[in-house]
Image (cartoon, rainbow, N blue to C red):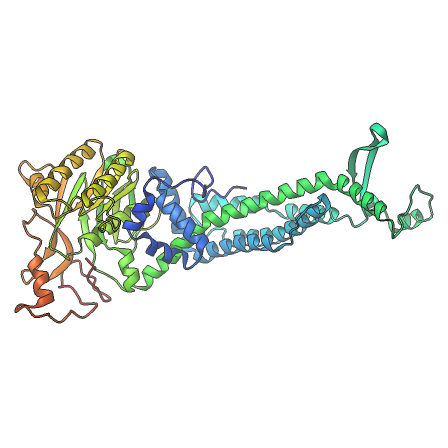
Length: 528
């Protein structure tokens, strides 16, 4: 049996290598916070969630297949969690069954029968869950999975399995045949089915007085008992191998079910935590990479919301047809947080998940890559500009056409003229290769060059909103770049108007009112 819960026509491969630079993207987008929420301390769930999130899908059909399963999981979470629990318990039970250092065929058979008996009980429970789910599921993936379970795990299957397991325990002893080979050695050992169980009690009673060719081995005849054990091993060797293979087959089935359902269990965990703090989620509408669509309403950064335990400020973004998005504006205006929210939306969307927004329509990308500002090299091996260019070179070498690049204050380690020129050449080259870019920057000369007439229709200019009194709303609004990032606002905030240190703001302060401020629950400003 196949699960086919992550892909329509193949099994998930948890051993496949992650895409190039995936670990960098995970760190820059603070993905560990999402993974902690999905796994809730379970290292296996964390591994499954990380691999699935970082190995994004590039087919609309594949994403929609997962989305349909996820919607069933959100509607019937108890069914999904019960199947996951059964698969986990079966695998843990198999590991608890005794093992041996130097296995013999008879020991392999004995352990295999015990494990198969355990698996049969769990398969029976699995069929009961499948029967209870009948009519409650709509997705093609889960409907097919439970239909196969009910068809394959029929009453006839369990009756046959119980009968074979009982027979392989040899309650009437082992019956086998052999022939003489070279040197009068035994050859062609064949295990035979005993006819004792089919005969009536009268025939078996009369057999005791019928003459037979037999002998008994003395209790102290160690060599005889050893030879008899070798004969038994030769007789049961093929059966032991068959039982071991059956055991491996059922183990692989439970492992696949556990791994593929584990991703959806992680989604349920994350969804429950976001719902508990009043943060909205939605199942996005997916478009092909060539369509260049990105429209999001109520976009927020889920890592920040999870850390603070409450709903945060959201943004609306309309970037259809835009291949390059610049984000500029005031210091501490929420630009980096906004950039991470865009990256996480794409990672979650391409994994077939819900996204942290009220509504979303977005094109797939062929990989998410990040180039964020780093701290100074403590070893002094490279200069900061050299280090930035080295990381950018790695990205350019790996990013495919229709990939997504997120840059956070890149190339800010040199002066504005040089940084702007280097960035301009990189952006134009990547644009010619159909790479989508979201660029947070303070390089006014760079952005101003793209903002001059005639304005490229594939470029979107955003600014972190700042009110006349200097307060930040932590929202991004369309507009031309500004020649200042309002560093004096930070000076006044920290030192006060007269140069003395100002009292810090109370934590959890509310941003000014506006159309995007949630009507219910507290809101907090983003961290940057």
